[in-house]
Image (tube, rainbow, N blue to C red; front, side, top):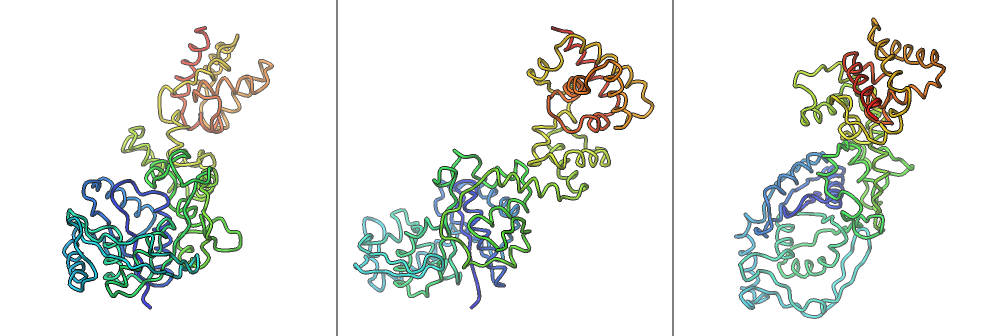
Length: 432
């Protein structure tokens, strides 16, 4: 059998994390089996379809490393095909016109289908006495267009969320009425939030775009989504995308809903960042800084690699460089009021910072070793615990009470910027 799967999003909203995992499972299965992945855009609802959401679908699939073998195929461009199929049913007497639309009456009976994950599922058609095929405006219903497309596109396996289980018996009735062979069905469990309800914004981001914008690495995000409801065995947590294709087994997808754990994703992403080569990480960070206007186009790449090396073990996501480490790029830094009150506004702090500023100014080589020696030397000379000078200096230089290693940060900033910031901090310390 030639394996052919499809992913069929609607451009009526941004691509949801749950839909993204469905796309990945289809992609892994198709590639593992040497089959084809079809992208079908279900855009028959023209009022709600939006070109911006279509762009989002494309960008999100690219982020996930998914490239369609066929498509995109737009349902809105297949109206003649749906009309042709409905005419067949009208001509045979199976379908009839009703209130401006076209329906298929369904005789009461049991419909049983084999789900590759859930086993046999039986539904009584008394739950739906008729099926609408075409609406009064001439557009096809979801179930009818879906069956026609899956059959004519020779889809062998329909892999989708288990919220579609209720649609499957209706679609089987339509397959039989149209004389089409049935595909195999596999309904994968939903992704739920911390409250065990369907993943929603109540527990954070829900679209792939939000994670992409926040700076999750695609390899980490793909790895995490793949292990939501499926496992390669051996308690493995790190499985790169190319290995996921080799290892994926549809039969091992779990039946129970998978809980989205934001902290686990953050941890996994931080581990991938730690494994990223410094030149590549520097480039990824620079792209964000350039977009923000915090780096000049002709920025010093060697300096940016030093930044990446300093921050590599501290980044949860790439956007942390904007949210947590702006002091490296913005002059003056944004001073946290609480940090200023806690560490700068005490007797003698201004005098010590001024003295340190003068000694740093005389340093012939403004490097990590020299900066640390001068700072610790001044603390010892004034009989201070090192932290009693280092904490105020940290706030003076970074604006924050927590930062990357201080002396490496100062060396990165360079003498001129550090001296300016110490001057400003002296003013803050003495402005009580």
